[in-house]
Image (tube, rainbow, N blue to C red; front, side):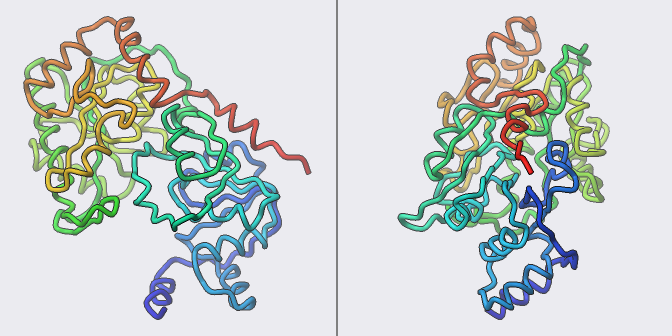
Length: 376
């Protein structure tokens, strides 16, 4: 209990009183996107990253035990919204709230490519999880969410990706790799999906191999190599240093992330995009860009690796026309010949079989807008 209290005090706090509103948003990421569809003066945002003092105060008055679940329950009581929304679709506590507020509408929106096993979520035995609607990336996610949440699932695609019109722009003759860099020490231990702890450095083996292989391809074909950065802040310098140590700073062009949509705008003109487990990679699979995917491996905990296979669980084969689990010079040359050298019409035909199941596209998020309409 004391440790929890100390941890709570270390969090950021806000002293803003929340008021009655038609919409209550849980979470802190991509709120500006949701705001496009919700009246500015008719919403409140509550997060467990920045703790609201007045919600905690109400819990103390009511002699309620402090927990994330009780914190969110009190927020709903205070705001009294008609619709509660989250973009943190893998937060199980959100699906525990519906039973306390059966008359309110709960909506979750998938915010990243999901392959996590159910055991990661630590769901209690015989626990009933509920949500009115979950908006997901692609068809294969329907059964994924329904396997542990009682809900209606609507295929939407990516909330951010859907904001950008799918245009047939002229592509640059470049290869762009989507970075998966995290500003973590390679010696830190991480518990992956509750399968056991391993050093963070072990999760980087595949990426380090792949960057070297892409560098080989670009030199072989005399194509410019770009690495699309993941970070907005000071971590971008660490990210640049990370890749420079792997292949040398003169062997690639680093594209720093400038704002929420800058990565999307850059990739739309990239001739070929290479990705591993990046959600952004899957998002662009819904567009017309030519793409190559490599599966990510965890060499010391093999059970994890299957969850990082390209297109898992819909795709079971290790290799295909544009994807592979073998990160090698020989394999990238095969994939490059298939993808880079093929006509656009053939590329669209080849990927169509997979796309509908993995990632959809709903321009301007029309399906979401329809569900967010409420009358006051």
